[in-house]
Amino acid sequence: MSTFKAFRIHQAGKGVEARLEDLSLDDLGPGDVVIRGHWSSINYKDALAATGKGRILRRFPLVGGIDVAGEVVSSEDPRYRPGDAVLVTGCGLSEEHDGGYAEYSRVRGDWVIPVPDGLDTRAAMQLGTAGFTAGLAIHRLEHNGLAPDKGPVIVTGATGGVGSLALDMLAGRGYAVTALTGKAASADYLRELGAAEVLVRGEFEMGTRPLEKATWAGAVDNLGGETLAWLTRTMDWWGSIASIGLAQSHELHTTVMPFILRGANILGVNSVATPRDLRLQVWARLASDLKPRHLHQIADNVVSLSEIATAFDAYIDGAVRGRTLVDLRA
Image (cartoon, rainbow, N blue to C red; front, side):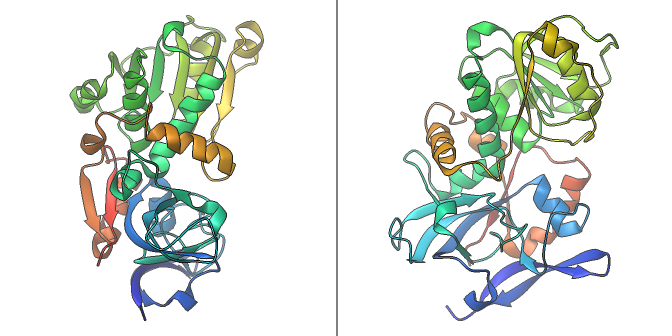
């Protein structure tokens, strides 16, 4: 190819300017694997980067998109051959390195994951960073003792990409899952994904005592702030919280009592800097025992590369349910 389309983010004063451009491989950052992109996806982090609402990019300009899946075009890494179906999520894409919102991407071989049996490139991006994060959270929770017979598990921010996928995965594994959402109108959607109970934020008392009724064996939290503090107060003995996001707040005001009196844990989940061996383990599970049963229902919205700029505001406004795919094919 001589040139190809890419959605590139530039610095503009104190903000950013993002637009579709014609690039060549020489315009991209270094790497030893060139991928022809089939699919990408939109994550909250992508919306922050493209709109300048969050300080995501560490240098400019960069191609946006923290996810990409497609086929290898060329590789200096002997692990990959032309035609291989591969994916990349996180790993500094659209932070320090050109990302996946392009017809072609060039990346480092250590970042590349072969698309596992049981998935194709489209399904890999229906999962994307959101699915990988949800799977990593469940993997860590189970490594720390969570099992379906331990008691109920709660997922906060349950209508978002990570929340929807975590709910589906947990229910498929046999957990009794409570979905916490601020969108009462989405209760039927959450029950269809497998929620045994739906709680609506603002419609129940969170309490203020250092320890409230011991309720949850585990939690996947996308919100932070007041909700995460409430989770610490309501964890059951030896329960664990996978802390994933900060959609509500980056602050946490709680006490040490849940940790020293009930043995509760907060497990930080970082999907960007996950070691390769662990990344491969989680993707293998996403194609097998953690594969969502309602993947097409969760990720049924598709935009083209030329339409992508119109999709970000809904993420900033918290108006998105599930996942949005980006079709990178010309």
